[in-house]
Amino acid sequence: MRSPLLNKLSVIFGPRPPVSWLLLCFVSVLALIAVFGSSSSNSFDSVTSTPVPEIFTNYRRLKEQAAVDYFELRTILSGSSRQRELGLCGKERENYVPCYNVTANLISGFKDGEEFDRRCEVPRQGSWCLVRPPKDYKIPLRWPAGRDVIWSGNIKITKDQFLLSGGVTKRIMLLEENQIAFHPEDGLIFDGVNDYSRQIAEMLGLGSDSELFQAGVRTVLDIGCGFGSFGAHLVSLKLMTLCIAAYEATGSQVQLALERGLPAMIGNFISRQLPYPSLSFDMVHCAQCGIVWDKKEGVFLIEIDRLLKPGGYFVLTSPTSKPQGSSTSMKKRNMLTLLEQYTEKICWSLIAQQDDTFIWQKTADAHCYSSNKKSDVPLCKEGYDAPYYQALVPCITGTSSKRWIPIQNRSSSSDLSSAELEVHGKY
Image (tube, rainbow, N blue to C red; front, side, top):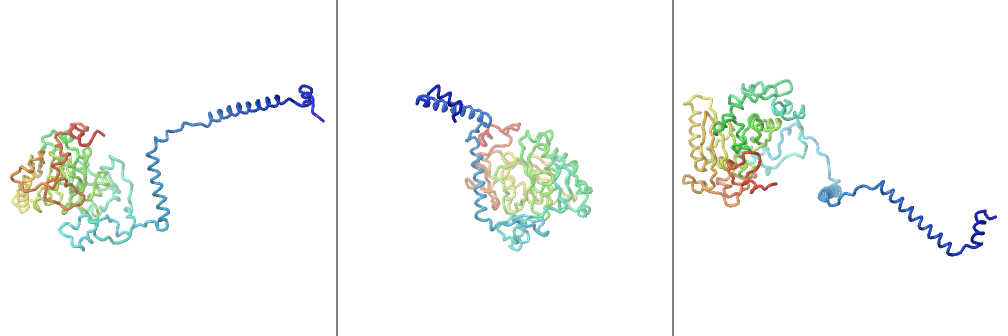
């Protein structure tokens, strides 16, 4: 039985609707589908669409990440079977430092201080392992508190060693239950670090040590830095001070400086150059640093000349504890006589002397070396500047470098001068 709706349509259009009517219905349906489909799509896009970032903005970062992922995958695919977890070293290697092995160096025939040099070519014994931290190691205190107070368990100075040390150590370091406090007003051999620093500034013709920065002294190399008190004071004056000391089995000097948050590294130039480029420092400081400067025909002074920038300063403090006329004083006078001869050959000038402290200044004239009639020290070959653990050489370098800029020509502010901008650029 037909529905009432079909009966009404049959009355209107007849038993068979015309073809034109069917086409019209078909087109209308298509139009409705298009209208409702576009509106729903727009409403969906308005809800889910987000700004698309520019694909090239992070191209470099994506490229670097892809390279890292590639190497990680290659490592996993090629060597996953060979990977193993490193174990902890035994207690006998607690003081191990790569490339520093005094026993192996002595067996290999090195002596006269050369056994303390960095020698990676000497065969290394033992397997790979992780060096253990001290048993009671704690995270150092934040700067600047950590500059003057360190945890006693982080270093190799025990309570018994401290009690057996001299009065100087007790005056500088106050050993508490689990901390060591440093007193900046005390010094190794001076009335105080602050007074000593002020004395150096006055010897340079400055009103106070706060004027060192304006005078062109920005970077200082402190050789044999002891407890790091002098470097800590210079850092407070915004001077970049690097401590360097010879290898010690306990690493006391370098370890103390690092624990205090000061830049420090193991270094010894008994036979090799220090690992810094030429013309790197404005001042080199040595206070009882243990180096015999008049040995080996002054080659150690030539190395200092290589490191110093034009117009830079070499500060040497070598006190004596015996009265005048003693053998120590006689040796000191002989050493100073030889130093005067050597420094004249490399165009240094003794600009100040006060008590046991001497200050020499490197020449700012690059032609002085070739025109100096008293000098028998030749210039190094053109382009020679290979400082990384190379043998000490008895020649002058850096005179033809574009970085030959006297420190006195610097701007008094922290900005680079026009001459420095030509060398280093604006960025």
